[in-house]
Structures are given as C-alpha cells and as structure tokens.
Image (tube, rainbow over all chains, first blue to last red; front, side, top):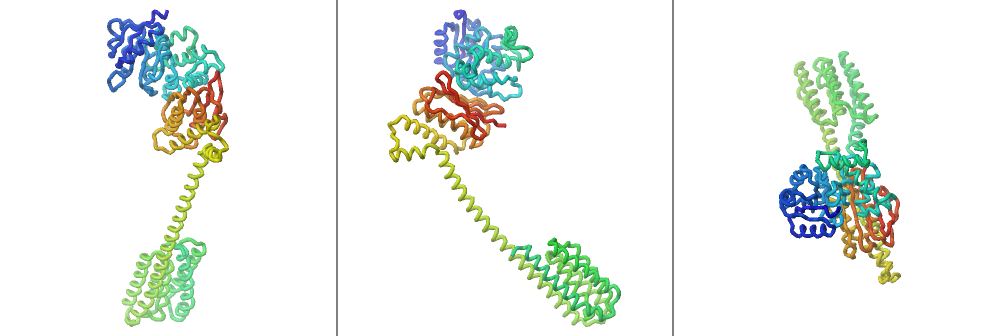
Length: 214
Length: 350
C-alpha cells in the first residue's frame, strides 16, 4: 500500500525540498517531482502525484492561497507546510480545503502521517492545527462537544496521543476518531471543495458522524 | 471661615439691623406724620419680606432674588403716600428703610443690588422733583449719608467673601498636597510589600545560603535556586510594556529553562486577551515552577479561546509538582501519566 503513495513538493527553499524528500523516502513515499513553482504539481510526473505538499510562502509577500485553491478545486489532496503559525491563515487553508496544515516547527513524523492520510483522502490534525481549532473564535465555527474540545486541547498541549488517551481514560483510536469528527465538522462548513465533500461523505458512510451532528 | 459662613453671618447681622431700623427708627416716624393708607401697606409688605428672609436664614436656604420686587413696590407705595413736600424729611420713613431691605435681600448679588438701589433712589428723587417744595441740600445729605452707609456695608461684605474664598482655596490646596503625599507613601509601601510577596522563595533561600544552613552542592538547593531564578525572571518581565504581557512572561520563563539546558517548545493559539496582572501571576506560576525543575524536554502551551485562557506545561516528571487547587480565579490541575507531568492553569475570561 505504502509503495503506492506518491507526492510532489512545492517549496522555494532547496534545502526544505531535500529534507522533505529524505523524510518521505524513509517512509516509503515516492517523491515524483519537486520545485519552487506550483506549476510543478500540474505538469509532468507531478500532475499525477497523489499528494501535494505545498509551502504557503513561495518568494512573494502574500501567501499562495490562490495556488492552494486552484489545486483543491481540481480535487488534489493538499498538505500545507508553512512557516506561518498564525491561526487565521491556518483556518483559512482548512476552509479552502487543505487536508492538513503543518508548521515547519513540526517534525518528520507529523509530515509523514499527514501525507499518508492525505493519500487516502483523510485529514490529519497535528498539534498546532489542533491549537488553532481550539482557539477558533469565528462566528462560523462548528459546534464541538465538550469531549471533542477536550481532546483537541489536550493534544495541542501534550503533542502525545498516548498521553491524551491516558489522561482522558480513552483508547488511542477514540482519540483519533474524535479528531476526525472535528475535522469532518469543519469540512462541512464554508465553501465547497471536493476533498471536503469526500471527508464528510466517508465519515457518514463509516458511521463516524451522523447527519444530525453536522 | 468659609464662603457659606460669611453669607449666613452677614444675613443674620443685616436682619438684626433691619429689624431695629424698622421698629425703633421708622415706626415712630410713620405714626407721627399723616401718611396715606398705602404707607401702612408698604410697611406691612416690608415686614413680610423680613419674615421671609428670617425664615430662609433659619432654614439655611438662599433668599430668592425676586423677593427684591417687594421692597421696590414698598418704595413706590411709601413715597407716593408721603405728605406733600415731605420727601427726604424726617417724615420720609421709607427711603432709608427700603435701601436696607434691598441690601438684606440682594447682598449676595452686588450687581442686582446696585441696580435696584439706583432704581429706588431715582424714583425717590423724581418724586421729590415732581412734588417740589423741599430743600435740595437736605435731600442730598439724606441720600448720600443713607446710601453710602449701605454701599459701605456691601463693600465690607464683598471683601469678607473674597478673603473667605482665598482661605478656602488655601485650605483645599493644603489638603490636596497632604493627600498626594499620603498616596505616594502608600504606593511606595505597596510596591515594596508587593516585591517582597512576589520574590517568594528567593528571600528565604538567600538567607539560608548566607547563614550556610544549606549548601549549593545539594540537589535540593539547586532546585530551589532554579525556582527562584524563574520567579525573578518572570517578575522582571511583569511590568514590561508589551502588546501581549502573558506571552511575554511565558517566554521569559521558557528562556530561563532553556539556559538550564531544557529543550522547551512553546505553542500559542488564539488571539491576545487582556489578563489582569494578578491573574497573570497565578496563570504563569505553576508552569514556571514545573519548568524550573524540568529535565530534558518540556512543552509549554498557551491557549486562548472565546471563554478561557489556559496555560499548560507537559514535561518529564519533575520532583516538585505544582500544587493543584484554586487560587482566586485560576484553577490549577496537575497529573502524572507515563512519566510525564502535565500541569495546567485555567482562567475563565467571562
């Protein structure tokens, strides 16, 4: 299965591209193309990569949200990998339809997990993203259950799902399904995107969430 | 003596003067000469004014200015009721008395008083001129003597008022200076007490080290030093003028721990919310304590939601755990799982 995962990396720093390539190779993820321009994800081998790892800051001052939007509208599975950790841009990327948002302070482990999840159309919520969701004060934010909020906060605070599971006296898979449910709730709000619709549809099919919860 | 006291005393003195003039000097003159009925009405009217002013003075309320109309009416009534050619003669009981009444009613309002007195005098002179037959010299003496005396009283009153005003201002300034002095003293005292309170573990530690009751070679002492260092660093950061003081204090504590070789990651979520200094202290304290004794790695997080501010630390289990409990508005929770200690301080913003 893992052999089938292919990825393309868009980042303006060669050292980041090289580092990401190495991390992905250790996890049997094939990096089919990389470059500093989003074009690399549309042409040649990059066009067929399962996952796009996209840096938000490609030389310019403004974040590359339009590149993200274009990819998402085409049904591409995108993991945003950015220097920026401010909540506003994080939430904006989720709203557009990114499957995951990682800050460059977060290590190889989170990136590999995010890419693997994205390859299957699944979301991945690293701790910084959990913090952004927990601190979300926008009017449109979905209603989370107290348990979901607690999982989100504990995961943000500890960066260890085992620790969260022990603290809240639940299993590891329950922690994960809480995080998934939260992401599905987020996928159900805001603008439409194929990746978001797929997240919601699959969650309902799998019985992870009921229509009433959305 | 305050302004109010001057006004009350002046009015009391004037009341006595007017009462005496009306009863002892003017009543005999009114009775002795053949005046018209209007003169008695004027006399009654003036007596009524006297009663009203006495009432106002006793009740300590200001005399209404429109009351001055009554003496002016009395002036007209008394003057027109005089026997022929008796203006300014001993039979003219009303001229001086009306002047005193105007003074009594309008002593607080010098401009109005001068205007009313002028009207009264002009009317009397006009009547004197119309009737004719009187001695202009005698009239002049009567007008001058009566009026100058009344104006003299007015001037004395104004001077007294001014002096009372100055004295009151000086007294107020003195009081304000004393209050300022007292406040400054209190502030300094608070600051000193505050520092002593917040220095917490530092002063006893320094005393113990100085008295050689403890040794820096002991692990326990080194832990105490570490705690004191973080507390001090936080205290220095507390009064810095920065946009996000809570984050600033957290960063300061993280900085001290990193100098000790602890690998600390700091994660922040949500936007800056105003947090009172006292609450900030309580929010940071448990995390500062855990960081001070942490080994290896630690993760500090600051989360600000719409309703809560939460400061948490997850670290390799230190030896001295922050005490759980509630201090004021902040709830502290500490637990240990699989070799990691998690301590969290929560404060509800609403």
